[in-house]
Image (spheres, rainbow, N blue to C red):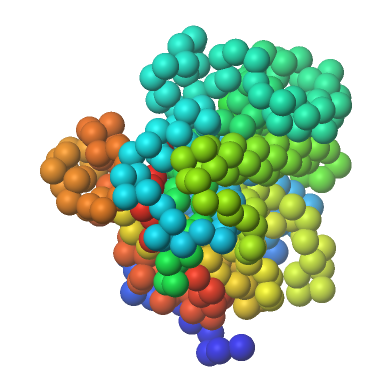
Length: 409
């Protein structure tokens, strides 16, 4: 293992905070949020902070929170199981059409996304008609446990679940066609558990607050309300969040297949996929063993980076992305960053930058360049290269990707 690359932050009456943030900015509000989390009595060993760290709801995005016999629902968040999937194809850059517009249009038609203009209905990002066969087949593996969850929590029946399976969503969710350093074509996308995950997360965050009403004055932020192992809602939350994570993983797999099918309609040359493939969460909680003890590890904007494990660290729209291999650094609880991390809010980005700025920043990429995506401009994010340097003892870079087509949610 290389020399440790983290900064140690020690505060009275709090667990230590180990920060892999050398050379990248960290806002004061995010530091305070980390300190608040570190003061919780069940933090195991220390918090691990990734270089893409920035302010979140309750807990900081870009943090790894190991807990002993307790889980903070707001630390997991409402985009349960959000993450990335990527696969390498046998195609080369020269196999792509000169005009990439029809390829983007084919992908947009194949995968419902947040602002799809022609799907109609209340929720433009869902399947408005009967979902395709792939969705039906996948839903069968999810439906049984979902029925068990909704038997206890009937309000979740009225959420978007079946019709959101295989759909992208909005915000920073995306689908990209990329090239690596040797001009091999990759497909990569970013999404999570959609409407049902949001409903599960929101409901249990409120239940945690309600359950802890008499204790909220004793915690530094009410969004740090938690469930203790053995308590009324703990087991139900673990079951529901596990289901949401499975939904998210399946959601990405369906979209990937639909993107591949769409590409085959535009690109006449036969090709294979999944030469190298990875499907990883970056907003989730699971039980793991670290330092010889079994604990719950919440990765809020962080990716598992066990020794030899492949992961994805995307840059912002128009910037490079990385396929990495974990180095298994135990000090980070075998984790790495989930992206570049924002340096400003979406509102500020829209005030600060223009459509012309967006066009310049995404030159050479077939993507939307209108006012509605200015909040995703690369300048609203940290420098991905600086982020990668700060975590050189967490991962090694396997492939560097540059997008040529980008579909935004």
